[in-house]
Length: 502
Ligand code: NAD
Image (cartoon, rainbow, N blue to C red; front, side):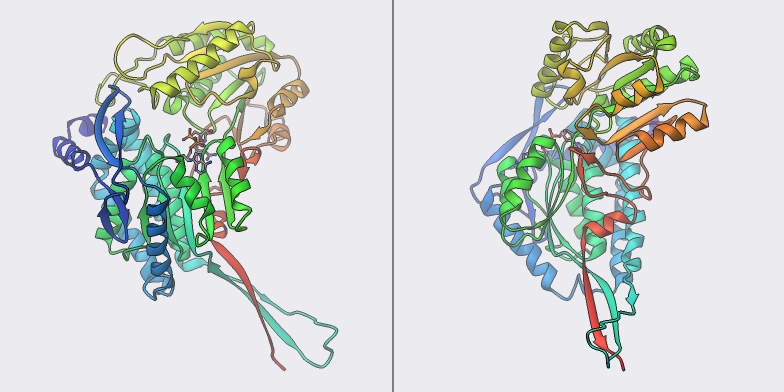
C-alpha cells in the first residue's frame, strides 16, 4: 500500500500542478486574488524551501467571503434543500476525495512534512471516514415533542415541539497539524446541518483546504456554501469579530482560544473551542514493559508529537520506570527521520523553523531545571525542520515542561508509587483533553476512567479517534464536542414551537 503511494507518478504530477498554480482565495465558488493583492510563501517543512505562494487575505476578503456565505445561506438551494439531497452532495464530495486521495496525500505531505504513507493511509482515510459518517446525520437531525402544562392557562391544552435549525454563517479556524482532517471535521457537520462556511486554514498549511474547495464545487455543492480565506491571525480575528458570522468553530492554541472568547463577547456569537493539551499516559505496575514502550512511543511520536492529545507526560509505576524509560529511549533513538517520499522515513520534520526552535527551547529549559536527557534533544544537521524524538526522564511537576504544551516529539517521564499519586499527577494540569491508562487490571482501568479529568480517555490505547465517538476537551482544553452526534449540536440552534391544540 505504502509503496503504491510513493510510486503514484500521476498523482505526483497532479499535486505539483496544483501547487504550481499558486491558488488564490476561494470565494463564491471561484478562485480570486486577495483584495489587497498580497501573497504569502508556502514553505515545505522537509526542505525549508518555498513551494509556492498563496493569497494573503485581510478583513476585506473576510467581508467578501461572509457576504457570499450569507447569500448562500439565505438561498433556497442549500438550507432548504431536501436533507437527502444535501447528504448526497456530501457523499459526492467524499467520492471525489476518494478519487483524488493520492493527490491530496501528496499536497498534505508537501505542506506539513508528514511521510506519504501517513498522509495517505492516515489523514486522507480519517477525513473520508469523518465526511461519510457525518453526511449521514443530514437526514437525522430531529427534535422532540412535549406535552406542556401551562397551568396558569387552565382551559387550553397546548402542544410543543422542538426543531433544530442551522446556526447560520459559520467561521471556522483551524491549525496546521492535520489540515485536511481539521477542515473536514469542521465543514462536514456545518454543511450537514445546512450552515454555510468561511474556513480559515492555518497560515503554514493552506493547500489541502483550497484543493478541497475545488472538489466541493465539482461535487455540485452550491457556490458560497464553502469559502476559504487564507491568511494569518488578522483573518481569524476578522471572522471572530464579524457581525454577520453567527458562530466560530476554532481549533488551535489555548491562548488564541482565550482571545477568541473575549472578542466574540461583542456579538455573543456561538463558540466551540478545541484547544491545547498536556495529556498523561499512565503505566500501572502490571503492564508488560514492551506494551508500555510501544504504547508510550505511539502516544507521543505520532505526527511528530504535533497532536493536541499527544501523550506528553508519561507516568510510570516505579517498579517499571527504569525499564520503560530505557525501552522508550531505544525506540526514539531507532527512529529514522526523513522527507515525505523517503521510503525509509518513519517521522518527518516539524512544521516550521519557529516550531523546531520552540520545541528545543522547552527541552533546554527542562534540562536546565534538572531533568535528564534519555534520548534525542537536538535538531539534526541539514535542510528541513527536523527534530530528533526526545525522551526526558526524571521530570517533576515544578518544571515548566510539565505544565506547558510543547507540541513536538518530546515526552517527559516521572515515576509514581501509588494509584492515588498517579491520578493526582495525571490531573495536575490546567488542560483536560486526552489521557490513557495502560493495565490488564479491569478494576484499576475503570477507576482511572472515572478519575481522569479529560474529555477523551483511552485504556490500553492512545490517540485513536473515530467519527462516531465525540471528541473534545475539558478545562482549558476548550468546550464543545466534535464528531458523533455532538457535532450536529454545535451547528444547530434549538427552537421551541408551541400551539394550542384543544
Ligand atoms: P494557533 O492558535 O496559533 O493557530 C490556530 C489557528 O488560529 C491558525 O489558523 C491561526 O492563524 C489562527 N489564530 C491565531 N490566533 C488567533 C486569534 N487571536 N483569533 C483568531 N484566529 C487566530 O495554533 P497552532 O500553533 O496553529 O496549532 C497548535 C495548537 O493547536 C496547539 O495548542 C494544539 O494543541 C492545538 N490543537 C488542538 C486540537 C484539538 O482538537 N483540541 C487539535 C489540533 C491542534
